[in-house]
Image 1 (tube, helix red, strand yellow):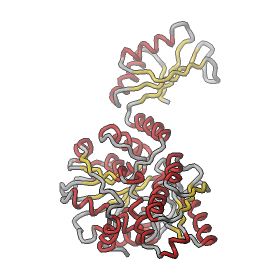
Image 2: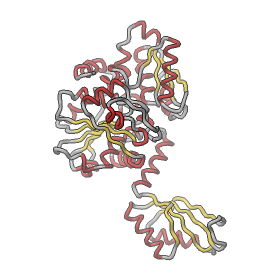
Image 3: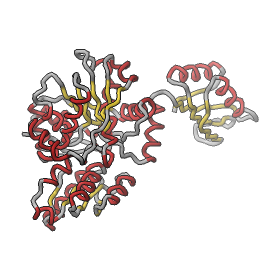
Image 4: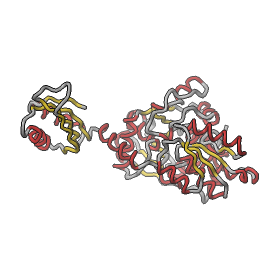
Length: 402
């Protein structure tokens, strides 16, 4: 069990290595929740996430003999970059196993920091099996992404900065994968029982709620989420013990919650985060009435900002749709000259901006005299979506939302 002194010792090791990251007040979230909400910007940390904190603490404490043997790690990206950067700073050879579908920018960045990357499996759990086999075969030291006291103590230094930056903080909301960040923050706040810690997992990769209820780590039934940074199948023994003993609640959020949160952070806070990094914000947006508490501020940890631009594009589009900013409709009209032009004119007259048109003349569900038109329309929000649908139906169009 790690405690506050372990985190303080880790902070001393990290002086000059991990950057103190800023906090930023979010007016949009503060208005939504009813108390001040601050964003702890670990997406601006070196290597793009909090992971350098734990990786450096763990590796700096290796013996000279262990350092000479090198290190090995498994990660979807953020821990990989943290290990690679720490290894470079400490002069240690590093091999990192990553899932074959890991984001290309994360793979390139890990190699750029000097690590040798091997692509194996479809998840962090599968990559971890290969990393353990490599450690047994070569003698390299396995740097686990979350299941080690030094790793978790290093991650907990985030909380020390939060206490300095938001002294009256009442709640810290933390993304949870294996649990190392949440455990470290919980340990750092052991002597501050007035500050609660709340973990957040993606509902489609959530091992902790059932594990905490059962009193032991249980494997998640599925790992199908855009939040690859927290898609971990089994909680670590070390972080699980901390979170269970401190009775830290872990909430879950949907893929729609995550995409809306990522969009809000980008649009209103002007910050780029990855889906897992937006999990804490997603929890606030999904249940805004649950956070006011005693009126003290809430701090959301933005745990990482390493996102593939292509993933960002897809997630932003999904977030716009979830927020009612896109409307996708299927319209049937008579197959007559000018019918498509008339439909587009009607949409434009109601303020809709057509982004994409698909025009289909043949299909098993179409009458001989009909055509099907699929429209993707940019709108001004949910109310405008309703106005568009009502207006088109009133004009006589047969509409189905896609």
